[in-house]
Image (cartoon, rainbow, N blue to C red; front, side):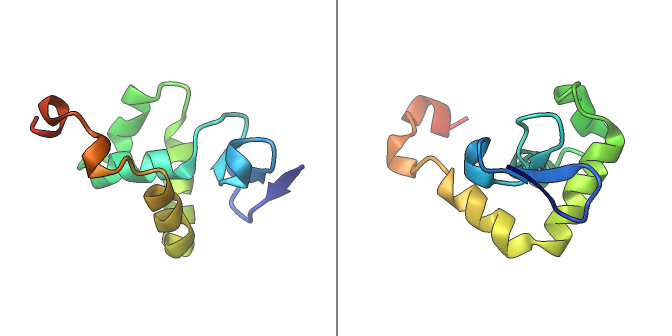
Length: 93
């Protein structure tokens, strides 16, 4: 079941990523946009790496994050790969 969030491009669907907030019409979670932005990629540049998204969708995801930081930070932490599971050759880049 798809649930509206009060943000025009953000929905939750129990059948997609366990109900984690996603961009409407995609399987792209809000956390993916937030993590990209936190790595220093400007919001305006994110659609270059995720060309199926519009700039409006990216900004709405960041707006959603601003309103729901605890929820998205928890999703980021749940999906984080533990340091001991990362190959040292990759981790040291």
